[in-house]
Length: 177
Image 1 (cartoon, rainbow, N blue to C red):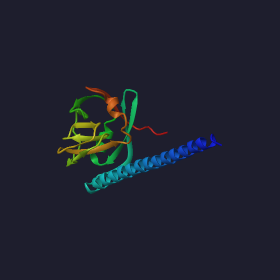
Image 2: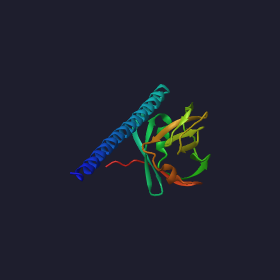
Image 3: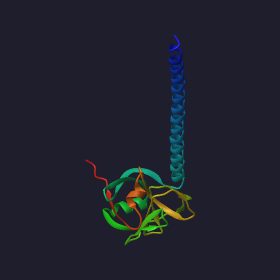
Image 4: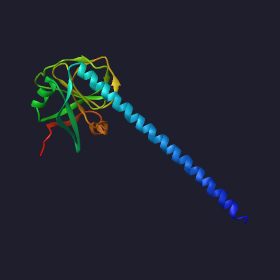
């Protein structure tokens, strides 16, 4: 009977540990879910801000190819995005700037409706002035004015794909079957 008591205490300790682990996992999943809700709220707020500024998200998409990596860009419904899409395909070497963006000056100007965007998100594709296309790969605040072209749907790995220094990038229309 003496051996049964330590075994019983061990099982009770394991049960308590399991309950604590399950509680921790539940709290973690709630935190992840809350973060996802906050992200969606942030994206919704950004979308609503774009609508107030005259831009709406359109289903039209383009692709950005950097080496073996491919990123889908959702274009905004505005004259700038449409004019940019009409230039495709484009194979360019983008220059590095500030450790957060790549840019290329186009040979022709695009229609622009620059606005103070205040916040840049990784994956934003924007026009600076009338002929400078900028692809951002980090989040940050800014006082500069840009015209929105589109947004990379899933920008994970974009910074690594673009690397440091110049980057060879292909912009092309999405092909549908």
